[in-house]
Each structure stands twice: as structure tokens, then as C-alpha cells.
Image: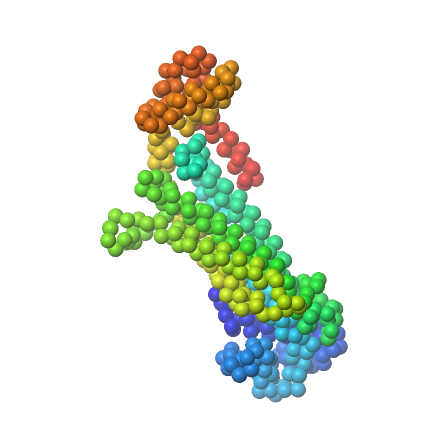
Length: 426
């Protein structure tokens, strides 16, 4: 991913746009065919030379075209170099070439997101029936399965795949419409031919630049992708807490967690994921700021994009890889999950008990009062909630022992997990 954003690759894509333009214009009879052929055969560049010229002229595209013209002169085709950059403005080249770089980057990101989704699916199916306490507000709520957590993440990864494909397609556009987008020097047909050679679509309308809502949408999508990475990592961080210990990130043999405390096994990868996701979100804000430019163009956006496009794509690629590895190697402790679920001695079935009492004829307000009284007492005294329910005469008056047992049935609570998995994976 890093190589995509090097000066070397940027200038390579610039040259490809220039050559496609010369060839398309040659097809239309604007550029001599032999000049286009000579440019394709001999035009080259030296990155160091471009940067050297730029120090003098203070303009990157002029430095680039000058260096390419020098390569044509050195090859004995100086006459053909006058057709380089013919009818184009700088941003015709820069924005169209940037679309090529973004296409390269999105190809890597889509593959990385697909790998994460595949690992999430495998582990979701592995732990589909692994019972775990569900938590709301960080407090025990009702039973879930660990596989269900993974299935939820899998579904979000799929939505992010759709978003990223759409954002990538939205940026598969070039523009060769001149300094203010009016095709003053070459017409729309030329733009269509040039873009077709580059496997891009022409932007239907542009100023001097492709409109930056497209780029903002991409960076925002990357922020969503990395937010999923953070969501997964944050959950693992919680589950790895000493008091919970239901799952933990892989800890390699020989790895050390603390310079002072030899017992430490810290979720350092998870913490890194959570931290770096913030950078991508911050870049999304900068992407939105780039949308509004003065009139037909200023350059306030381009300096920003030199930072946020490489940084966001590189970070997203990195975080996808780290999160895929995290999920793939995640250590899961089903026995601890079950022990934590049983910690409150049946409290987590209070909701089902409330419904069963109401269905059996007890007024809901009365049922809620009775169940909550027992629940609060069990919470404060760490006593057995189920035993208290079974001994309550008001409850026994409407529910027999078999019905009470059914209120505390784990299988009943989780009977629809298969149906949820069918929705997610079919």
C-alpha cells in the first residue's frame, strides 16, 4: 500500500495519463500518430530530476513535463515532446492519475476487508452455540452466544464492503475538461476516449477538479471500516479484563507484557487498533473540509490529500490486517463464559419470568414488583435468585415447578440463534 503513494508511482500514473491523452488525440487527428507512438516508446522520467526541477520552478506538474521532455530529447525525439500535455491543464493529469492510485489502493483494501469477513464467518460458526452472558451498560443482561457477537461483526463487515465498493466506483472517474471544466481546448469526446483507455469514467461535470464529495465519501467509508476494527478490539479488551477473562488476544511464547510485572498479558494489539482508528476518523473531518473550494478551484484541498489519502489507506490496510489476525488467533474460554453467566444465580432470567407470570394471569405491575424485589435482594446479598423464586408462594400460585424451570431455561432463551445465523449467512 505504501508504494502506491510514493512519488515514483504518482509520476508513473501521471505519465500514463499523458500517454493515454496523446494516443486518444492521435486517434482523433489532433496529435500526429508518430508523435504519440514516440511518446509511448521513449517518454520516461527520473524522480530525482523532477524534484530537482520543482525546487526551481515551484510547480510539480511543470517539473514533471520538463523532465519527461528532457527524456524525449535524450532519446532523439525532441520534436515529438511538443505534443506532450497538449490541451491539458495540470489537474487534468493530477486528478485523473489520483483516481488510478485510489483504484490501486481500494483493490488492496477490498481484499483485506474480504479476508476479515471470512475469518469472522469461520469463528462465528465455530462459537455459534458457545453460551455467554450478554451485557448492556456493561451489566449482565440476558444470555447470548459468542458466535452471535461474531455474526454481528460479520454483517457489519459486509455493509462496509458494499460501502467501500460504492466509494471506489464513485472515484473511478477522470476529468480532462480543462482549466475551468469547459472543454475550451479539447472536447468531451477526447475526454471520453482518454478515460476509456485508463478504464475510468469521465466525470459528467467538473470545475478544474473532480468534486471532492467523492473523496470525502471514501475517507468517511474508511473511517467506518476502521470503526469496525475498533469495535472488535474494544470488545476483546473488555473480555480480556482480569475480572472477566472470557477471551484474550493471542500472547506469543516469549512475549513480555510489562517491564515491571512479569505476570502481565496486556491487550496491546487491541489498544493499538483502537488508537489508530481515531486517526482515520480525524482524517474524515479533513476530507469534508476539502469539499468547499473557492470558485472553480483553489489548492487548499491538495495539500490535505497528500496527507489523508496515503495515511488513511495505509492505516486502514494495517488495521484490517491486525484485526483479521486478532480474530483468527483469538483465545476464547467457554468455561469462563458459562461461569460468568451463572455468577448471579439466575438473575439474568428475570425478564422471561416476568413474561411468564403475566401470561399465567398475574397483573404485570404485580409481577414486576415481585420479581424485582427478589432480584434486588439477590443482587445485594449475592443470594440464589432462582431458589427464592421457587419458594415464593405468590409465584407458585400461578406457575408450577415445571413452568418455573422453563422460565430459567437457557435453551429457550437461545432457541432463535440458528434463525439469526440463517439470516446473516444465507
